[in-house]
Length: 134
Image (tube, rainbow, N blue to C red; front, side, top):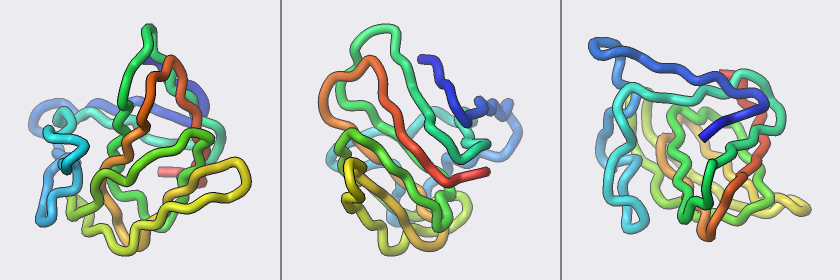
């Protein structure tokens, strides 16, 4: 996978903070996703702009986990399911909201949501927008 737009790959080596820790309710597993994401690997958003994920071959059922989404928003032209939203490293998810704004499917959550979004279908590219700068 390659990413373009306002993204920055971050790898925290063993011994650093594990931001993918889980609480109760667990933020990353659900009926859609039965395993936690890999430890210590994150893609952080550094600029509020179009972000594109490119896959070298078609990928089915893309899962995007999120950590500490704060009160930011996420916009995508691809429909998705909020697969999970719970307690993680920085706090708990409260009031996750999915909506539609023109051609975009939207997600936002109050406080410090941690969880997973699932995009159904087969993709070689997924693009979305966010106002995040984290």
